[in-house]
Length: 538
Image (cartoon, rainbow, N blue to C red):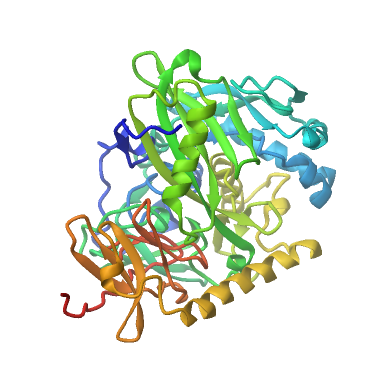
């Protein structure tokens, strides 16, 4: 059973343990560069490093703090084994597609090791196997099929019946030679090497417009509205600059987790989802050795990381849901109950970290890395990582640099090309996604709201209420003070919903997230929710 006695830190462990890092101020005047990279997460910083290493003049523009959004809230597995992936890839993209995918992902694993060694980055690197398991004996055939497909793709994969977990499983696929690390220590170290080599990194610098032509022109908000969005798409905070600047570059890379700008049709092929994360220190002998994943039980993932006092930090992830789905507090409780029941030492841990992560799934289960759309030669994108952003972010850095610098390109270039057409069998994904968006856009407006009046909203609660005939996102803080905002997401106007555990507003259409003061936490929205006047309160 879950315990309520221990203190809980509602923050990512990776963020807490690197909280004293230096800030990189926004630009004070207009800039020019060879390449402008929008977003300071794993894809943006890896791309920036590879470009700087190739001799280009690079500027990174980050809406909030680098490595503070999705990359600062990951479970930080760098692996080529992505669940039950390779049997599906073979069926959808052929044996060659599965082989190229495995080659690109394992190359990213080894590239991470090389970068840490060559650049002297201490990122708590550990080699560990990746294990995908099932408890249902009727699904063992899926595991055998996956192990065989992964071997054909070139991975060191095997079917096993002993997963190395403290509970029984029906079977598992084990892939050796994979990697886990501290993501922020890696990315902050990489950022230091970028600036030492002449690259420029600016935080609190939200890109609000991108004009594509023979040269790219970016409008950058460096005022108080700039904060609140890592990679221009996540994080917290407010800007420290005052006004806006223009950045001109030959090429631009959109590494914002969700493609915010341009004429790309990728948003119709992406589905956002969130996962919850719990982490607790346990005795080292109680931490299973490896990185474990099951699609059962609404997804469960676990691995451990170094911790003080000879202990390990046991990290448990799961409870997938769409942004705005609600009931997040109950999802956390279910995840903690599962961990306490199945993992020795978790229930007795003296503290607990709690956070959430968000990612986007593509229509055909492959990332989009390359030219943003058929009509551009100078704007590139990296998105659709499907929960595997660490390996795909490193891969994207290498692939985008090959595009921009020229010369030989990796064999998997076409596999990830954003301009590819999804297979006919996946066309229904785009139709279903747009139907869901339309349902929210129209259907949500037919409801009177989540609460009948302001008095129905408890402390630290929130709901959509109609005030003066308009839907308003209303939050009551711990002191009882009430804040009202427009409930319409500033991206495309869908109505937001309240996340009761993280105390945020979330858009169910495309995954934008906002703080209770309206500031942007995660894109594709680039502008805050508008303030609304409250009626006189009793």
